[in-house]
Length: 323
Image (cartoon, rainbow, N blue to C red; front, top):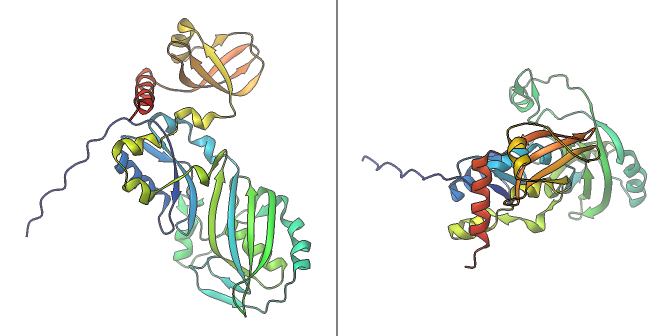
């Protein structure tokens, strides 16, 4: 039986940031491609991967917003996680094979003793089951082939760590953690290391990202909700491109300087030195791009094209029209 060819989706320019509450079992890229299809967007990218076994905040960037996605890669993160004590697995989470089982004799005083050891600047060795690359190949690919490669420890910062004991059942104890941390922190590794400090081992059984940078899970929409919406309702969930630039210093240029700045020319003005600047034009008031200021010069960084600016303005005006 010959199947009829699938109708091609007519793509269109879409600009902005959608905060997705990524479901369990989905890779970040699968979730991105699904939302891109739902929005019929031409260009999209995510802001760093979230494991399939993790749920929570995943900012998705569309169109002009992809130019600033690195800012979310570098942002601090916050997670809720649960680690089962007494059992170690090959992957550090519930997907792996059990490789060790040890008795658990942990009391709240033990938690109070170990938490300071994992707060502030700490060193972590990236797990073999991670997307970190070695010689152009992801570590998990080596792990699946039964090969362990040497990994350099890396420095990360745990800004705050709240840990509490939780009874899973009559025989099993777990720890529940809320972690605020710098980019590059492996929560699986943190759970394993805390388990070792408690002399019983541990593996992660749940992981949820509840914040990244200024974005929290309370601002997110689910895939299921998006699927049930009309096209206009989906577009209404898009935050403007400059939602990624919340902590940037704002500089506004007049019409003449706008054109020159967009062509990559430096502008002179009475500006203090700033590393992170969001630059706007006046007519209309629109984001032009990012820059930094030094010695009274505004030095262009990532710039939007005139077409992207016009499309973003048109999209925002359309979103603000009454239903």
